[in-house]
Amino acid sequence: MDTEVIRTVSAPTEAEARAMAAPLLDAFRAAGWQLREDIWIPGDRRPGLGESLLLSPKSEQLLEADGTLRLSFANPDPDAIAPSTGPAARHPDTFESIGGVRYRRLVPRWSLALVVGAIGLVLFLSFASTMSVRPFAPAPTPVNGICPPGWMPGMHESNGTLVPDGTCVEQY
Image (cartoon, rainbow, N blue to C red; front, side, top):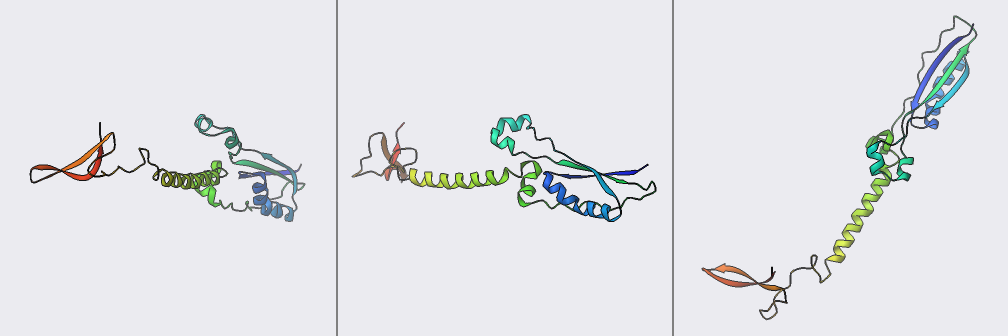
């Protein structure tokens, strides 16, 4: 009767799981064990209710979850002892440390959209400030003490009397 040992490695993608399992495979093969079966079980990538409301269908396809690589080793010797080696450590990338495993493929897209949106907002506001139409245009100044239609001279108090202050105030 063969001795059988099962080891599992969890990672978001199959390629990462197989890379992490390499030291494990090498240790078992060096100890005389043979790989009987290796199965990749993908993680659950279905979007939740909040994600389905916020994410586009394209973004939903980019969601990731930890899958499992299941390795089954066998040895013909019934008294064989399995090596105590574990899988290699997995180092999260920058985007994974920001958004977690599930959103690591979306974080760069969101970051780029945020940068482009900020640049667009700055360009829009700089363009809008040159417009002569409210609400972005500056308040007009009186010409010869007369404000344009819809505006009235701004006033301030000086020695108990109202004096024009050289600005125009929108008339309500």
